[in-house]
Length: 383
Image (cartoon, rainbow, N blue to C red):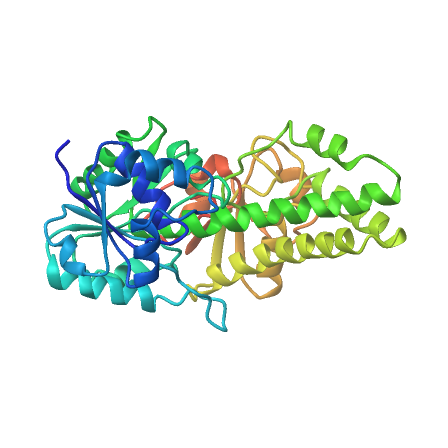
């Protein structure tokens, strides 16, 4: 592949990335506004990150570095991987990314730019007003294993506006490894990157909470967590947790943590219940936003294909709407008898078409009805 590659930002991540690219056979042009960093690379000074010195010694002759952006004028692809400090409100400050992009655009307005810095959701749309051919290619690496992680990722995410640009960037990564590469929309890539790290933070919090609980009972938390992790479920978005188990278990967990002064567990259970209640209110507000007065609910059981209504969120939504003066039409032949014991003022329909015909807004209560189509407004948590 005769592609010329550039990297802007030769810091903790940019230098290892440049060396990985050089090892893969690319001639790499690296730019950093910090003359000190450039001189450290040229002088082959010692770097703390594993394998950087080794790669620099082996492959450094094919890495050209400078503070001058004109070095990038003939590059086909340029990755910007500058720092993005946190603002007081927590969002990332893109001033260095923006400055780098502007300077790059002046010398090379047609190259494909890959932003790899941490950015906010929606940032690529804003940056595309400076440089049209732009992608988001977030890094998923850890300090202490940066080169290893670039060469051995779980996957690569490329957020591109066109299939052609996404594939062009993917070709570079295929020279480095054979791991999965997902080409998605830029905003999808932004959400994936940010929320991946949030999920890891959630995992650490969960593990520490289990650690505090196990400490109270003189139990090995590692043994407990190792077994819990054997069943990891990849849930999709929808309604909250309901049924005969999860709500009761969370409340039992909350009570035990309160009784034993496990503060993190108590707060965690409180948060789970608050977020679960929020899900109900969120969909009530979505339904009400249409300013109609009749709603058809397809499915009121706590999950598809059962007659049970334990802590059913579709049922709670129906109750709230009825109390708010709505005409509520329900279709759920399996759960109908149980639901009638709770919903005295609801209208139960004998078919899906009857429910849709009588209502002005349709709410999909259980996922087995998620493919229903209608010209009327549909509120579907499962899509």
